[in-house]
Image (cartoon, rainbow, N blue to C red; front, side, top):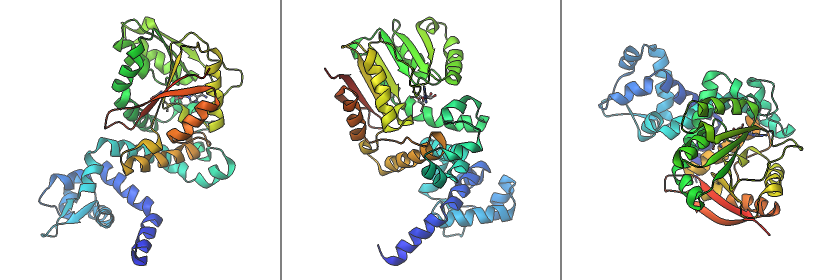
Amino acid sequence: MKAVNALYEAHKIAFSPFVFETAYTMLELGVLESIHNHRTGISIEDVAKETGVSDYGVRVLVEMAEAAGILEKNENDLYITTKIGYFLLRDEMTKVNLYFTHDVCYEGLFFLKESIQNGKPEGLKVFGDWETVYEGLSQLPDQVKKSWFDFDHFYSDNSFDDALQIIFKDQPSQIFDIGGNTGKWAIASTKYNKDVRVKMFDLPGQIKVAKENVGAIEDIRDRVEYQEIDMLSPTSEIPGGADVYWMSQFLDCFSEDEIEQILLKIRKNISKDGRVYIMETFIDNQRFPAATHSLVATSLYFTAIANGNSKMYTSTAMKYIVNKAGFECVKEHHLHEDSFHTILELRVNT
Ligand SMILES: C[S@@+](CC[C@H](N)C(=O)[O-])C[C@H]1O[C@@H](n2cnc3c(N)ncnc32)[C@H](O)[C@@H]1O
C-alpha cells in the first residue's frame, strides 16, 4: 500500500465513530430510505422535505456518507445509494450488528482501555452495577434488550434447523440445555420431537423469562423443566441423566479456565454414552472476511460490556480446552452454507 493510501486508511480509523453514527442516524431519521427510494437521485433539499430533517442536518450526513462510500452523486449531481448504502439499509444481518453496536456496545466501549487494564467489563456501568451483563440482562432498557436479543437470536435461530437434525440423529429422550436463555431451543426441540424432555439451566432472570415463553405453549410445557444455576459458582453442579448436553453460544461467555471448569462439571456426572454438543461461531471456521471481522469485534463486546474475560474462540482453542477437561471431539459438524456455526460433538474420553 502506498503511504498516501495508508494515511487515508489511518484517518478513516481515527474518524470511524463519525461514520458509524452517520449510518445509524441516516437509518433512524429515514434519510437513507428516502435517498434509496429515488433511484434516479435526489437533492439535499428534497430529502429534507421528505424526511422533515433540516437542510443542514441532511447536508452534514450526506457529505460524511458520500466520503464513506455509502452514497454517491450521479451525473445530475443528485445523491443515490451505493451497494454499501443498500446493505446498510436492507441487509438484516448488517442492521442487527449495527443496532447491537449502537444500543448495547457504543457507550460502554468508551471504557475498553480500563476493561483491559482491570480485566473487568468497565463499560457495563453505563447500564447498571452488575458483575456481568447476564445478571442484568432482563433489566436492561427496552431498546438495549431488544438489540441484545435480536443479535443473539439472529445468529442462533439461523442454525437451529440443522442443529435439530444433528442432535436428534441418536433419538435422545432427555436434553440438558445449559445457558438456555429465553427458551428458544427448549421450544424448538420439544416441537421437533413430541417425546423429548428438556431441562434448561440458566441464571434466575433468564429462567423467569423462559418459563413465561414455554408456559404459553400447551403441547410442550409439561416436557420442559428449569434449574436456576450460576455456572461460575464453585458449588454449582450439573447432574447426570441426560443423553445430550447442549450448549449453544454459551461457552463464549467465559474465559478459557472457566470453560474448562464448566466442562468438568458436566464430565463429573455424565454417563459414558452421554453426548455433549457445543454450537459456536468459531473465528477460524468462517467463509467470509465480514464474518471474521464481526466475530473479533464481538470479542471486544465481551471485554468491555459482558464480562471482561471471554471472547469468540477458534475451534482449535475450544478443542484444546475440551481435551483438557476429559472429552474427545468425535465430530465437527459444519452447518449449511449460510450458517456461521460449527457444532462440536464430544464424548467422554475414557
Ligand atoms: C449468549 S446467550 C446464549 C443463549 C442461547 N443458548 C442461544 O443459543 O441463543 C448466553 C446465555 O448464558 C447464560 N449465562 C451466562 N453466564 C451464566 C452463568 N454464570 N451461569 C448460568 N448461565 C449463564 C446467559 O444468561 C445467557 O442466557
